[in-house]
Image 1 (cartoon, one colour):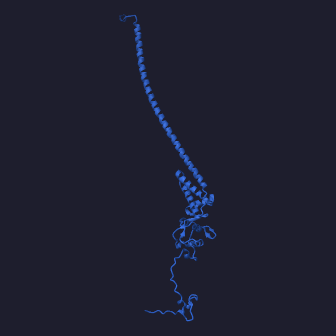
Image 2 (tube, rainbow, N blue to C red; image 1 turned 180 degrees about the horizontal axis):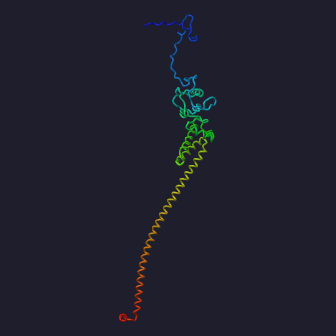
Length: 293
């Protein structure tokens, strides 16, 4: 086996820092007198240590800038819940984590907030499918969530998405197909939104008026149906009476005809009797012999 010559130590000294290795007067290397250091151990890198400051951060939803920080990122941190540790692909929030002192492995799992399909409408990040409706609401009624009690902007966005979805359903459902139960459910949703100071009174009043109309219509329809049933029953009674009366009339007519026939017979008999009486008067005071001879 070929031996490889070992280079002398003093040949490589020029490449080492003077702080790393020193030579004593006897030419011995001080590093041999140092206590052996403990073996190095592998330390798992946190998302902070793995972040490359020289590289641009990974794409994330756009947000309004306040104090040099992204509102979306800070809002997500404030709404944090304990979740599995982040992967290296999500290390773009390490600046916020260092400043706010959040522990590794804590983040918010709001897919809709971080989704690429979310767009900015005013101060809110909402799904692109409802962005047009939300923009129309803001244009006509202003920022209806300006006085909202919810601290998290992401939760405000979710509530606004709920409102927009409700309006989408109203837009896609014909008025005649809106059941009373469905309208009452929508009114209940609007009351929940109002409970956190989201201004939806302009919509609730319309739905409540429609719900009242439905209720009045149903009650009026029921009243009219009751009247129809009552009239039908009354008509049936009158028809029964009419049938009975018609039967009685028919029977009376029959009796009248019978009486006419009897009267005719009696009249005939009366005439016969009168004729016979005349004949008897003719023979009064006479005998049959006088008539015969």
